[in-house]
Length: 149
Image (tube, rainbow, N blue to C red):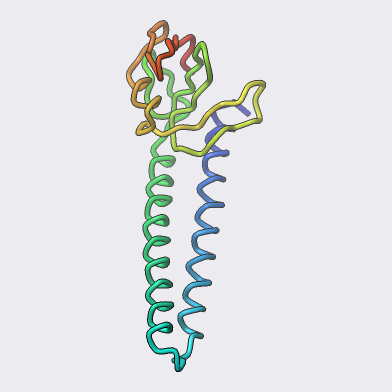
């Protein structure tokens, strides 16, 4: 299996696991809201319900973000090779290696960690559209692109 295929599967698994965690949390909140009975505490009860509903809304936003990540992953073509960095590129640099897809953390299955980043990440914005040999300045460091897969 190619390294880009492994990276794509790593990102897909990240999205799957994160979706499940968020959905489980939403289910727990739904159960808490459904099972909560009106207590004599009055205001305390209403505050608890309001906090649960706020948490549910926050989780709903996180779920939307994960769904956007899944859409981005579905649009990536890992077989395409270009001379410029674009979505789906594996970029080898003088400092680190990056897979431009979604922010999913470090993939440790290669000889060196490969950082799965989104194009909205600061380093992703700098690398996007660049070519082999180009140098970007990231946090005061000069980083040279040595290979684009």
